[in-house]
Image (cartoon, rainbow, N blue to C red):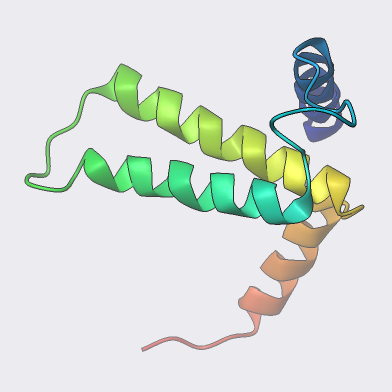
Amino acid sequence: MDIKELTKRMHNFVRSKGWYEEDSKRPQTPRNLSISLALETAEILEHFQWNEGFVREDLAEELADVALYLLQLASIAEIDLEQAILDKLEVNASREWD
């Protein structure tokens, strides 16, 4: 499965919940999706807040939440995430770090 198929499945899920409807209590705007992405990312940090240990299944669930919000934000903003990742990898290849 590729990024386009994952995005399609994510859209199908969101549509099935009615979150794309005009009167949705969860408007799927770039602003709202960005906030949700940041909140879900913070939930990843909770797994490491007081120690280095984590429950793999719980962490996997949080990572999936982050990935889904990222896919949706990119799609709503009309960004080809796959191409953006490839472009960024190319830029990073020429960067130097300490």
